[in-house]
Amino acid sequence: MQIQLKRIYDPVAPDDGFRVLADRLWPRGVSKDSAHIDLWAKDITPTAQLRQSFHSGQCSWQQFADGYRAELSTNSHLDAFVEEISKQPAVTLLSSVKDINHSHLTVLLDVLNGVMR
Image 1 (cartoon, helix red, strand yellow):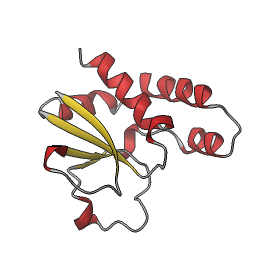
Image 2 (cartoon, rainbow, N blue to C red; image 1 turned 120 degrees about the horizontal axis):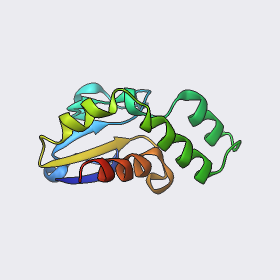
Image 3 (cartoon, rainbow, N blue to C red; image 1 turned 45 degrees about the vertical axis):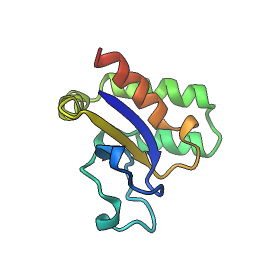
Image 4 (cartoon, rainbow, N blue to C red; image 1 turned 30 degrees about the horizontal axis):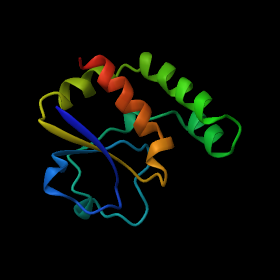
């Protein structure tokens, strides 16, 4: 299975496959129709406390990534999410973050690659 990361504001592409919004909050300025979302996976996103501490600068990128990994390791929704996306040949994880490379999506992708081997 191929999993890619993308901003929700980027154009929808044929190779996106199963489109998953991995944000706790719905992105501003995006209608539900134009988003072309197959699944809104808000239950596997970082907690509000962790997200806010990272965005406010109270924790570093590494602390955020480690904290999110710890949250995912005890997240009861992760197994169902993995089961759902494993049925798909291509998955695109979407978020409204500006910097995909330093976002929860990269951590989630790393965890998914580890559990889906």
